[in-house]
Length: 170
Picture 1 (cartoon, rainbow, N blue to C red):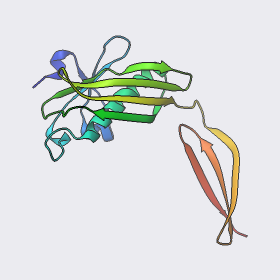
Picture 2 (picture 1 turned 45 degrees about the horizontal axis):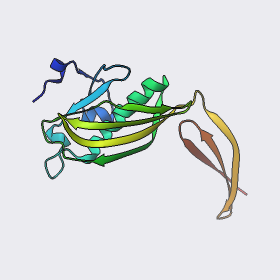
Picture 3 (picture 1 turned 180 degrees about the vertical axis):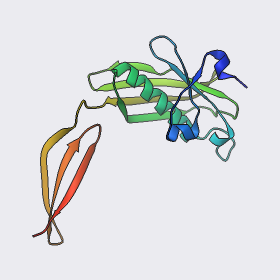
Picture 4 (picture 1 turned 120 degrees about the horizontal axis):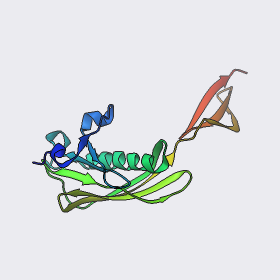
């Protein structure tokens, strides 16, 4: 079993959901970092190999941090896909070094390969969108009728759209 700290990996302080499935590790490698995690029993599916959702979570975090580095500001995942190639087994150290394929003013396109040693576990692609510097209110009002009441909705855009409804009594 690999000792990540002996090979230069540092555990990432990542509270919230990632704290539940981690720890995840990172190490500096050129322009962008490498990321890894050790497959523990909490990552197992019913076949006793790493659950695909864990591999997707890991890739999403690695791609997200890489996109953040590339964009120089916060990034939200807007697209992610993964192809499962082989199983990651308990005790494997799974790692990836996401590659930035292209960066625009608002988007970062990435790809990466998840490896357990020299064995390809999965390949992935993702797109991150830079967070808006500030909230932008779109001048869009939608009005309709719903069971005798007027309903109005205004869309507010940040890194995702949110609709707020308010009831107007006739």
